Length: 117
Image 1: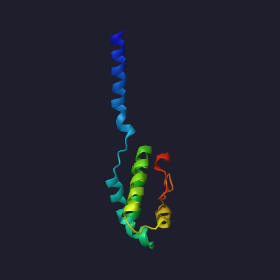
Image 2: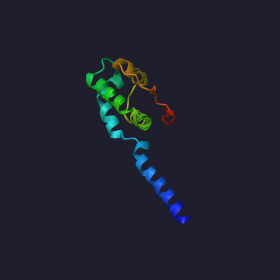
Image 3: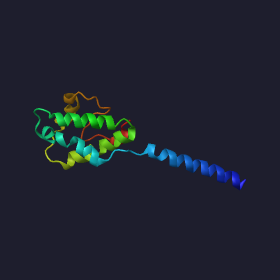
Image 4: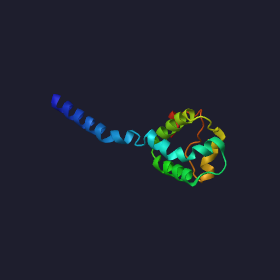
């Protein structure tokens, strides 16, 4: 009986170790911020969106296909938007459309990132 329980525990632990990387976000806040940094001028003052900004947004969108990555990106953007002074929330909301990017969530400073799927 003890041997059977031990085998079952080994299988469970092995499954947890193998599946653990898939449950965690592979994206870091540093990566999110560096992709969006070229957008800072537009986010503050509007005007023309720099091509590097749209490239960064498209790259970020590609990197957030998994739910944990979307949640990480959302949290990072939320933190960054409060850290960088002068960001216009309307510019932030309109940025994906100006870059031709369809995000899976609509960003706002009040978004609950835990509810992103």
